[in-house]
Image 1: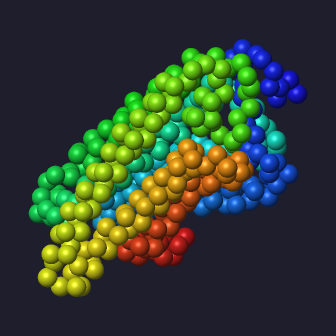
Image 2: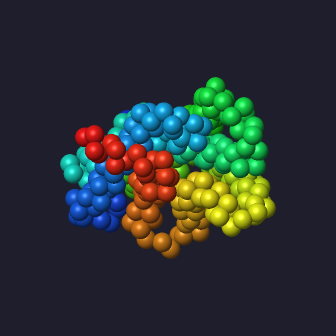
Image 3: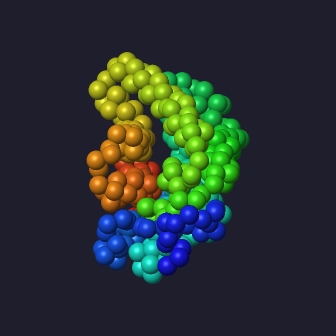
Length: 313
Protein backbone atom coordinates (compact mmCIF):
# COMPACT_ATOMS: atom_id res chain seq x y z
CA UNK A 1 0.00 0.00 0.00
CA UNK A 2 2.93 2.36 0.43
CA UNK A 3 3.29 2.67 -3.33
CA UNK A 4 -0.24 4.07 -3.52
CA UNK A 5 0.44 6.71 -0.90
CA UNK A 6 0.14 10.38 -1.78
CA UNK A 7 2.46 11.41 1.02
CA UNK A 8 5.68 13.28 0.23
CA UNK A 9 8.53 11.26 -1.27
CA UNK A 10 11.46 11.88 -3.58
CA UNK A 11 11.35 10.77 -7.22
CA UNK A 12 9.63 7.36 -7.05
CA UNK A 13 11.12 4.35 -8.79
CA UNK A 14 7.65 3.36 -9.96
CA UNK A 15 4.38 4.99 -10.93
CA UNK A 16 0.90 3.59 -10.33
CA UNK A 17 -1.45 3.47 -13.32
CA UNK A 18 -5.09 3.52 -12.21
CA UNK A 19 -6.58 2.29 -15.48
CA UNK A 20 -10.03 3.90 -15.85
CA UNK A 21 -10.58 5.87 -12.60
CA UNK A 22 -14.05 5.38 -11.17
CA UNK A 23 -14.68 2.25 -13.23
CA UNK A 24 -12.29 -0.12 -11.48
CA UNK A 25 -15.06 -2.65 -10.81
CA UNK A 26 -15.80 -2.80 -14.55
CA UNK A 27 -12.18 -3.26 -15.67
CA UNK A 28 -12.70 -6.90 -16.65
CA UNK A 29 -15.70 -5.98 -18.79
CA UNK A 30 -13.91 -2.99 -20.29
CA UNK A 31 -11.04 -5.27 -21.27
CA UNK A 32 -13.31 -7.11 -23.74
CA UNK A 33 -13.75 -4.23 -26.24
CA UNK A 34 -10.15 -3.11 -25.68
CA UNK A 35 -8.82 -6.60 -26.36
CA UNK A 36 -11.11 -6.95 -29.38
CA UNK A 37 -9.87 -3.68 -30.88
CA UNK A 38 -6.26 -4.71 -30.29
CA UNK A 39 -6.78 -8.09 -31.95
CA UNK A 40 -8.51 -6.47 -34.93
CA UNK A 41 -5.69 -3.92 -35.23
CA UNK A 42 -3.02 -6.65 -35.16
CA UNK A 43 -4.85 -8.87 -37.65
CA UNK A 44 -5.85 -6.04 -39.99
CA UNK A 45 -2.46 -4.32 -40.18
CA UNK A 46 -0.52 -7.56 -40.61
CA UNK A 47 -2.96 -8.51 -43.39
CA UNK A 48 -2.28 -5.20 -45.16
CA UNK A 49 1.48 -5.76 -44.86
CA UNK A 50 1.19 -9.33 -46.15
CA UNK A 51 -0.96 -8.33 -49.13
CA UNK A 52 1.39 -5.55 -50.23
CA UNK A 53 4.45 -7.74 -49.77
CA UNK A 54 3.09 -10.68 -51.78
CA UNK A 55 1.37 -8.73 -54.57
CA UNK A 56 3.92 -7.25 -57.03
CA UNK A 57 1.31 -4.95 -58.58
CA UNK A 58 1.05 -3.12 -55.24
CA UNK A 59 4.75 -2.26 -55.07
CA UNK A 60 4.02 1.44 -55.60
CA UNK A 61 4.58 4.56 -53.45
CA UNK A 62 0.95 4.76 -52.29
CA UNK A 63 1.01 1.21 -50.92
CA UNK A 64 4.46 1.66 -49.38
CA UNK A 65 3.06 4.60 -47.40
CA UNK A 66 0.09 2.44 -46.39
CA UNK A 67 2.58 -0.14 -45.09
CA UNK A 68 4.41 2.56 -43.13
CA UNK A 69 1.08 3.56 -41.62
CA UNK A 70 0.31 -0.06 -40.72
CA UNK A 71 3.68 -0.50 -38.96
CA UNK A 72 3.19 2.78 -37.10
CA UNK A 73 -0.29 1.69 -35.97
CA UNK A 74 1.07 -1.67 -34.77
CA UNK A 75 3.78 0.00 -32.67
CA UNK A 76 1.34 2.61 -31.33
CA UNK A 77 -1.32 0.19 -30.11
CA UNK A 78 1.29 -2.27 -28.79
CA UNK A 79 2.85 0.55 -26.75
CA UNK A 80 -0.46 0.96 -24.90
CA UNK A 81 -2.61 -2.18 -24.85
CA UNK A 82 -0.44 -4.90 -23.24
CA UNK A 83 0.11 -2.85 -20.07
CA UNK A 84 -3.51 -1.67 -20.03
CA UNK A 85 -4.73 -5.28 -20.23
CA UNK A 86 -2.49 -6.35 -17.33
CA UNK A 87 -4.17 -3.60 -15.30
CA UNK A 88 -7.65 -4.74 -16.31
CA UNK A 89 -7.01 -8.47 -15.84
CA UNK A 90 -4.41 -8.77 -13.08
CA UNK A 91 -4.59 -5.37 -11.33
CA UNK A 92 -0.86 -5.01 -12.12
CA UNK A 93 -0.70 -1.22 -11.84
CA UNK A 94 2.97 -0.57 -11.17
CA UNK A 95 5.24 0.65 -13.94
CA UNK A 96 8.92 1.45 -13.57
CA UNK A 97 9.83 5.14 -13.89
CA UNK A 98 12.12 4.51 -16.89
CA UNK A 99 9.55 2.20 -18.50
CA UNK A 100 6.94 4.93 -18.06
CA UNK A 101 9.15 7.47 -19.84
CA UNK A 102 9.91 4.95 -22.59
CA UNK A 103 6.21 4.31 -23.12
CA UNK A 104 5.61 8.07 -23.21
CA UNK A 105 8.28 8.45 -25.90
CA UNK A 106 6.90 5.67 -28.11
CA UNK A 107 3.29 6.89 -27.87
CA UNK A 108 4.03 10.49 -28.80
CA UNK A 109 6.81 9.64 -31.26
CA UNK A 110 4.57 7.39 -33.33
CA UNK A 111 1.61 9.77 -33.11
CA UNK A 112 3.90 12.40 -34.66
CA UNK A 113 5.20 9.84 -37.15
CA UNK A 114 1.64 8.96 -38.20
CA UNK A 115 0.93 12.63 -38.83
CA UNK A 116 4.06 12.86 -41.00
CA UNK A 117 2.97 9.79 -43.00
CA UNK A 118 -0.35 11.49 -43.74
CA UNK A 119 1.56 14.48 -45.14
CA UNK A 120 3.59 12.15 -47.37
CA UNK A 121 0.44 10.36 -48.53
CA UNK A 122 -1.21 13.69 -49.35
CA UNK A 123 1.86 14.72 -51.37
CA UNK A 124 1.81 11.38 -53.20
CA UNK A 125 -1.86 11.89 -54.18
CA UNK A 126 -1.10 15.50 -55.20
CA UNK A 127 1.67 14.43 -57.59
CA UNK A 128 -0.35 11.46 -58.91
CA UNK A 129 -3.38 13.64 -59.76
CA UNK A 130 -1.91 17.06 -60.52
CA UNK A 131 1.32 15.97 -62.25
CA UNK A 132 0.86 12.28 -63.17
CA UNK A 133 3.56 12.20 -65.86
CA UNK A 134 6.26 13.00 -63.30
CA UNK A 135 4.91 10.78 -60.51
CA UNK A 136 7.24 7.84 -61.21
CA UNK A 137 10.28 10.10 -61.48
CA UNK A 138 9.55 12.15 -58.35
CA UNK A 139 8.40 9.36 -56.03
CA UNK A 140 10.96 6.66 -56.75
CA UNK A 141 11.48 3.75 -54.36
CA UNK A 142 14.62 5.46 -53.08
CA UNK A 143 12.74 8.71 -52.44
CA UNK A 144 9.94 6.85 -50.63
CA UNK A 145 12.51 5.10 -48.39
CA UNK A 146 14.26 8.40 -47.61
CA UNK A 147 10.90 10.06 -46.91
CA UNK A 148 9.92 7.27 -44.50
CA UNK A 149 13.26 7.50 -42.69
CA UNK A 150 12.95 11.30 -42.44
CA UNK A 151 9.42 11.00 -41.00
CA UNK A 152 10.55 8.56 -38.29
CA UNK A 153 13.62 10.67 -37.42
CA UNK A 154 11.47 13.79 -37.26
CA UNK A 155 9.10 12.11 -34.82
CA UNK A 156 11.96 10.84 -32.65
CA UNK A 157 13.83 14.17 -32.53
CA UNK A 158 10.70 16.21 -31.82
CA UNK A 159 9.45 13.94 -29.03
CA UNK A 160 12.84 13.19 -27.43
CA UNK A 161 12.64 16.28 -25.15
CA UNK A 162 9.44 14.90 -23.58
CA UNK A 163 11.08 12.17 -21.46
CA UNK A 164 14.25 14.19 -20.83
CA UNK A 165 12.25 17.12 -19.46
CA UNK A 166 9.98 14.79 -17.49
CA UNK A 167 12.98 13.04 -15.93
CA UNK A 168 14.48 16.26 -14.56
CA UNK A 169 11.39 17.32 -12.56
CA UNK A 170 11.15 16.40 -8.86
CA UNK A 171 8.12 14.25 -8.00
CA UNK A 172 7.17 14.66 -4.37
CA UNK A 173 3.36 14.75 -4.28
CA UNK A 174 2.06 11.45 -5.65
CA UNK A 175 3.05 8.69 -8.03
CA UNK A 176 -0.50 7.90 -9.15
CA UNK A 177 -1.36 8.43 -12.84
CA UNK A 178 -5.13 8.39 -13.43
CA UNK A 179 -4.80 6.61 -16.79
CA UNK A 180 -3.78 3.16 -18.10
CA UNK A 181 -0.68 4.52 -19.85
CA UNK A 182 1.98 7.21 -19.37
CA UNK A 183 0.84 10.22 -21.37
CA UNK A 184 3.18 13.22 -21.35
CA UNK A 185 0.94 15.76 -19.65
CA UNK A 186 -0.38 13.19 -17.14
CA UNK A 187 3.16 12.46 -15.94
CA UNK A 188 4.54 16.01 -15.76
CA UNK A 189 1.41 17.20 -13.93
CA UNK A 190 2.58 15.07 -10.99
CA UNK A 191 5.78 17.12 -10.61
CA UNK A 192 6.14 19.49 -7.69
CA UNK A 193 7.90 22.13 -9.77
CA UNK A 194 7.24 24.76 -12.41
CA UNK A 195 6.55 22.60 -15.47
CA UNK A 196 5.88 25.45 -17.90
CA UNK A 197 8.81 24.37 -20.10
CA UNK A 198 7.24 20.93 -20.63
CA UNK A 199 3.78 22.44 -21.06
CA UNK A 200 4.92 25.05 -23.59
CA UNK A 201 6.97 22.52 -25.52
CA UNK A 202 3.96 20.19 -25.72
CA UNK A 203 1.88 23.10 -27.03
CA UNK A 204 4.63 23.90 -29.55
CA UNK A 205 4.55 20.32 -30.88
CA UNK A 206 0.76 20.44 -31.13
CA UNK A 207 0.54 23.79 -32.93
CA UNK A 208 3.77 24.12 -34.87
CA UNK A 209 4.37 20.50 -35.86
CA UNK A 210 0.98 18.79 -36.08
CA UNK A 211 -0.63 22.11 -37.02
CA UNK A 212 1.77 22.57 -39.95
CA UNK A 213 1.06 18.99 -41.03
CA UNK A 214 -2.65 19.79 -41.18
CA UNK A 215 -1.95 22.94 -43.23
CA UNK A 216 0.22 21.02 -45.72
CA UNK A 217 -2.44 18.31 -46.05
CA UNK A 218 -5.19 20.90 -46.53
CA UNK A 219 -3.19 22.71 -49.22
CA UNK A 220 -2.46 19.43 -51.04
CA UNK A 221 -6.10 18.42 -51.11
CA UNK A 222 -7.19 21.91 -52.14
CA UNK A 223 -5.02 21.60 -55.25
CA UNK A 224 -6.21 18.02 -55.75
CA UNK A 225 -9.87 19.06 -55.63
CA UNK A 226 -9.22 21.90 -58.05
CA UNK A 227 -7.62 19.44 -60.48
CA UNK A 228 -10.52 16.99 -60.06
CA UNK A 229 -13.21 19.59 -60.79
CA UNK A 230 -11.39 20.56 -63.98
CA UNK A 231 -11.78 17.06 -65.43
CA UNK A 232 -14.16 16.96 -68.41
CA UNK A 233 -16.57 14.18 -67.36
CA UNK A 234 -18.38 13.23 -64.19
CA UNK A 235 -17.11 9.63 -64.37
CA UNK A 236 -13.52 10.83 -64.58
CA UNK A 237 -14.05 13.12 -61.59
CA UNK A 238 -15.60 10.33 -59.50
CA UNK A 239 -12.88 7.84 -60.42
CA UNK A 240 -10.09 10.29 -59.62
CA UNK A 241 -11.69 11.39 -56.36
CA UNK A 242 -11.99 7.72 -55.37
CA UNK A 243 -8.20 7.37 -55.46
CA UNK A 244 -7.77 9.93 -52.69
CA UNK A 245 -11.11 9.54 -50.87
CA UNK A 246 -9.77 6.64 -48.82
CA UNK A 247 -6.84 8.74 -47.60
CA UNK A 248 -9.21 11.55 -46.66
CA UNK A 249 -11.30 9.17 -44.54
CA UNK A 250 -8.22 7.93 -42.66
CA UNK A 251 -6.84 11.45 -42.21
CA UNK A 252 -10.13 12.81 -40.85
CA UNK A 253 -10.41 9.83 -38.47
CA UNK A 254 -7.00 10.79 -37.05
CA UNK A 255 -7.16 14.59 -36.80
CA UNK A 256 -10.80 15.34 -35.90
CA UNK A 257 -10.85 13.18 -32.72
CA UNK A 258 -7.39 14.53 -31.89
CA UNK A 259 -8.72 18.09 -32.05
CA UNK A 260 -11.67 17.10 -29.85
CA UNK A 261 -9.36 15.52 -27.25
CA UNK A 262 -7.09 18.57 -27.27
CA UNK A 263 -10.03 20.93 -26.69
CA UNK A 264 -11.39 18.67 -23.95
CA UNK A 265 -7.99 18.66 -22.20
CA UNK A 266 -7.99 22.45 -22.04
CA UNK A 267 -11.64 23.38 -21.64
CA UNK A 268 -13.37 20.25 -20.36
CA UNK A 269 -12.80 20.71 -16.64
CA UNK A 270 -16.40 19.63 -15.97
CA UNK A 271 -16.05 16.41 -17.97
CA UNK A 272 -16.04 13.27 -15.80
CA UNK A 273 -12.53 11.83 -15.45
CA UNK A 274 -13.53 8.31 -16.51
CA UNK A 275 -15.18 9.68 -19.68
CA UNK A 276 -12.09 11.74 -20.47
CA UNK A 277 -9.77 8.73 -20.03
CA UNK A 278 -12.03 6.44 -22.09
CA UNK A 279 -12.20 8.92 -24.97
CA UNK A 280 -8.42 9.43 -24.90
CA UNK A 281 -7.85 5.67 -25.07
CA UNK A 282 -10.33 5.21 -27.90
CA UNK A 283 -8.58 7.99 -29.83
CA UNK A 284 -5.31 6.06 -29.66
CA UNK A 285 -6.85 2.64 -30.43
CA UNK A 286 -9.52 3.37 -33.03
CA UNK A 287 -7.23 4.48 -35.93
CA UNK A 288 -5.03 1.33 -35.76
CA UNK A 289 -8.21 -0.75 -35.88
CA UNK A 290 -10.08 1.28 -38.51
CA UNK A 291 -7.27 2.09 -40.95
CA UNK A 292 -6.85 -1.45 -42.36
CA UNK A 293 -10.64 -1.84 -42.53
CA UNK A 294 -11.00 1.41 -44.50
CA UNK A 295 -8.20 0.47 -46.89
CA UNK A 296 -9.51 -3.08 -47.24
CA UNK A 297 -13.02 -1.90 -48.11
CA UNK A 298 -12.28 1.17 -50.21
CA UNK A 299 -9.07 0.21 -52.04
CA UNK A 300 -9.96 -2.03 -54.98
CA UNK A 301 -6.52 -3.61 -55.35
CA UNK A 302 -6.40 -4.64 -51.67
CA UNK A 303 -10.06 -5.67 -51.61
CA UNK A 304 -9.61 -7.94 -54.63
CA UNK A 305 -6.56 -9.57 -53.10
CA UNK A 306 -8.28 -10.58 -49.83
CA UNK A 307 -10.45 -13.44 -51.25
CA UNK A 308 -7.38 -14.90 -52.97
CA UNK A 309 -5.52 -15.03 -49.64
CA UNK A 310 -8.35 -16.87 -47.90
CA UNK A 311 -8.78 -19.19 -50.91
CA UNK A 312 -5.11 -20.13 -50.67
CA UNK A 313 -5.49 -20.78 -46.95
